[in-house]
Amino acid sequence: MIYHGIRFSLKPGVTDEEAAAGLAAMQAASAQMTTVRSYVIGRDFGGEYDFGAVSVLDTLDDYEQMMNHPAHLEVDRLGLPLIDRFVSFDITDDADPDLGAKIADIHRRRYAGNPDVADLVADLGEYSGSGAPGTQA
Image 1 (cartoon, rainbow, N blue to C red):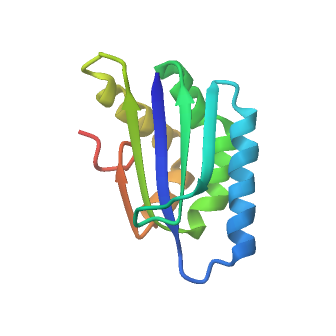
Image 2: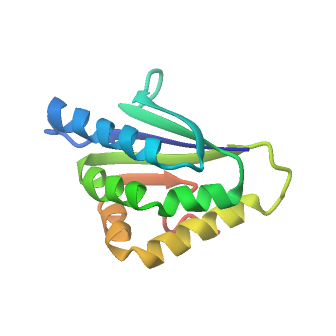
């Protein structure tokens, strides 16, 4: 089981309406992805971020399908321009010692295949974590 999480803060000047539309798009996209067992999207309390999301996936193949699903890529294209700070993380009960490297490879291939998304990520004020370009050893 893999729990893929993100936390993010919006750029100054993003309106409540833009934020609500972005969250609604995330909800709709997550509902379309049959490999996502369950998910939660909403306000982030107790940290330095405005919002967060967690998706639950059974396998690494499910993870890769989610990351490359057209609905997920569309949310990236619409939402990343609204985001200032972003962090991604993955928690798993899988004993594979190479799982982190395999997750990083999924992100490398995703950015290579979608250079426009990679450019949007590069424009973020701050991005760290499991999917961040340049942090995948």
